[in-house]
Image (cartoon, rainbow, N blue to C red; front, side, top):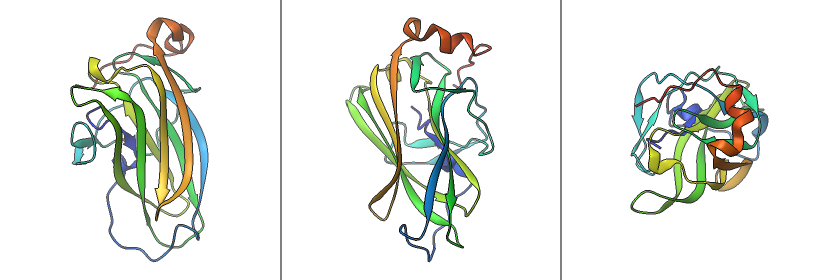
Length: 177
């Protein structure tokens, strides 16, 4: 997953400080689904992920197809677009990705910190970059602030042939690695 959890953390930058509490800041999901191709703008360290790093992705990227059905196919990304509402300062949140066991260590949970900027849309996603990442089953992307779950979206990852209509909507994903 090469910490392919592109979430706005992948975001623009990780700030540190901030006065607003999770209760003062609302979070609204704008969209969820598949992004056919993403372009990495670099990487940042993310020790709580399988790969130990995240790809940085432009936060203004739209979701290509609104769906919860995700084909397990190299190069396919899936995730959520969201916006923080309220508050007057950047707010750190934790992105939590849960999924069936993957890789030799059987990892089922990955997380990283990102910063929400008031009234700026964000993006959190995962891209299948390696065959071992393409585990089928229920995946969940969630955003948490100060231990409070602010938003959550589930996805069903299925064999590519079981999501042919989703793949047909993509012009041909290109693996990032």
